[in-house]
Image (cartoon, rainbow, N blue to C red; front, side, top):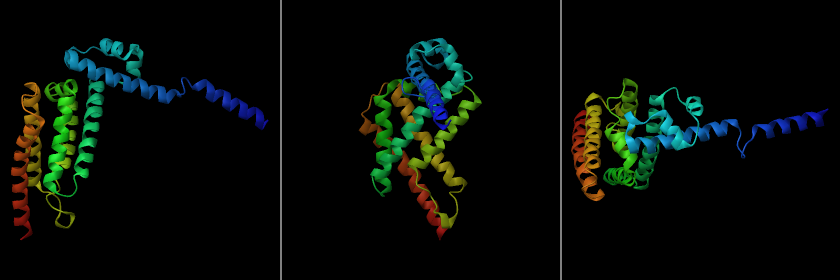
Length: 224
């Protein structure tokens, strides 16, 4: 009997496999194909003109598979944004870590990675910088969360644990710094990269230094 059960389980498992993947793996693969296709289509025609049909055709999937993974077009936009920005933030974090403990070196490494990727990948850069604003409160909330992560990569904590949290003023400083970097990126991408990566990094870093200098000043005042 045990032998029969084992054979049944093996046969059932084989039935669930297709191309070496089980149902969950195939579903994940289809979802990633839709995200990749969406990024490509957004880059060609813009998010407002990107239809579900066009994205499914680019992914070589039928529309029923779209709704297997996403409730609507906005849900796919958010997933694509998180996919692109998540990978970008991971790379920025790794670049900063590889630069060592010096704050200036870490900042320069993270910014260099950021602007390099924007230039290397112009389609997603245009979509997720130029066309992502004002779509809906849900999309704006996702952008806000991404901005906080960006801030944490670029800005070391203004106060360490024994002195409490950053405080409202320091949080505003870091928010303003990230806003300046993104505004520079917006202009740079919209004008089709007129400056070199090195030049735009230097410009962005100069704004960051102002915020960091002010943060240090406020920290010193608080610790006196």
